[in-house]
Image (cartoon, rainbow, N blue to C red; front, side):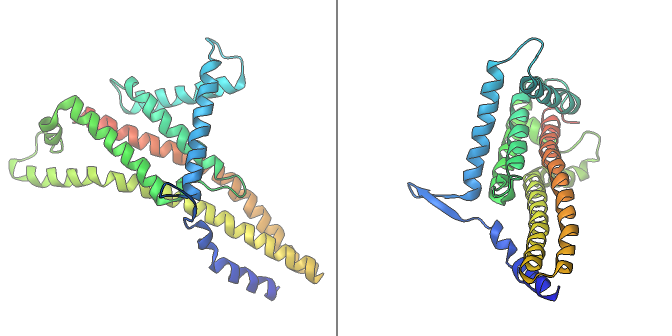
Length: 262
């Protein structure tokens, strides 16, 4: 038992290195890491899903794939767009649906043994957050105009001496949204996958030690580790959806605040 535990501790200490970005190959001086590669894989899968779904659209869907795709789009349209943005939400649904399906598919691909979740690196979640940040600010400027949009950071009815302070705090709060979007998605995906890796490593090491030593008692903890791994895998499947939903609904709320200031 002690030998298995020592091996587990030794291997667990270097576990984070497996999640570091590593250059796989270069194209014209552009280094492609494993996360960038899986980002393109997720993008290709989203494109494939949309193209296949668009070719098989029906007034009343009879095929499960098409029905599931339409349900997902309607879910974003109604529960995320209409309920959060309100008036004028329809023009933003393609953007929000693209965000949702890309993040969801990237997260699900990362659950495949041996694969990587593109959202498991801060650089890609930063890029997604920056896209969302630019999008809602662009429509805020477009809807209200530059000066009215900037003025909207200070709500009506506050005392005049407080306006500069409130405006500055609201402006900082708006700018920091790009950080919260990026870190929330990255942190949740990285933490979940590291837990899966820990449970998988423990299961493997205790089982291998029991087989090679011929001591069945050493292998008993691997049963518990396996059930924990199974439970966490099921939980991470739910998290894959929840994180896509949270990122999308937060982006939707930022769009709503930008185009409908209070």
